[in-house]
Structure formats: C-alpha cells, structure tokens
Image (cartoon, rainbow, N blue to C red; front, side):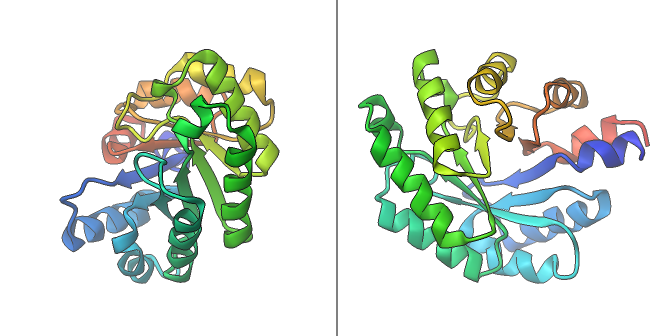
Length: 218
C-alpha cells in the first residue's frame, strides 16, 4: 500500500461549512472515490445527494447530530440520527451535551449516547466531547461515559472550539484503553496526521484531506 492510500484510509474528509453547495459536495465525493478516504463528513442536508454520488463505493457517509454545540435535547438528537441514516448516512458524529457534563450529569450523558446508538443500530456512532472546552478531569469523565454507553468511537473536537492535541489523545487512551479515537480539528498536513496515526487513532477528521494525501508519497 502506498503512503497516499494508507493515509487516505484514515481520513474523514470534512465539509461542514455553512456555505457548502451541491457542487462542493460533488467535488468532495469525487475526490473521496479518487483517493479512497474512509468517509466524507457533511451536514445532514447533503446526505441524500452524497449517498447517490457514492453509491457502489466503500466510502462512508458521516453526518452530524447536535452540532456544533451539543445542547439539543435527546429526542432531537435521536431524530437527527434516525433521519440521517434513512437518508443514506452510515456514520453519525454526535456532540455530547457539554453543559450537562460540566454539571456532572453523567447518567444523562450516558443515557443520551445509548439512546442515539440504539436508534442507529449497527451504524457507527462517534461522540464529540469538545476537548478544547474541558478540564483534564472532564475529559476523563467524558471518555468514560462514551465507553460505558457503547459508542463506537470518541472524537476530540468539532473544530469550532479548538482542535485535536497529542496530549488529549494520550489522555483518552490512558483513560479508556481500546476505545477507538477520531482526532479532529487543526490537522492540515501529512506530518501532523502521521503523528496522530502513530498514536493509534482510528480516524482523522480534516477539511484538508486532499492536501494531506498529496503531501504523501504516491
């Protein structure tokens, strides 16, 4: 496997900007097929269109729930997730309720994650804990809640409140060994992506996927 193919297989190529058009989504999906990304990560409005473009490929279609603040009710997050899956999404990136975490409402957070996971069945659930807004203790509590609730993956950041750091990935790995990690936010070049992959992350969320792949050896 070439370096380009290897690095591409870790990437969730992300386009969550509010100005994204169908033409932007078409370009992203074409690029995903060309390079072999793990998934595209897009807003819910574009899921049906992306599903048509990626039909027959192995590219995952990730979309968001409770994004970007995490402060919606559980029912709304469940509805967002169910509709996204019905429209062709294969992965849900849900933002944890950060305020509830800070109030130590761990039972609420755990229940929220469990309910969303139950509503999407065997599809992948990634829970965004927004590390840039948390203390080290809160990061540990969030990590344990994600693991306890049975989510498939923990994700560091939305990208709107800071990004992934090596220190946070190490903290997550120490707190919950074996929990899959998506490092997201601020990863814009091949060398940085490689640093996170070397730590054992499962996915890299980035809006610079093409640049990262093209910096790798063909």
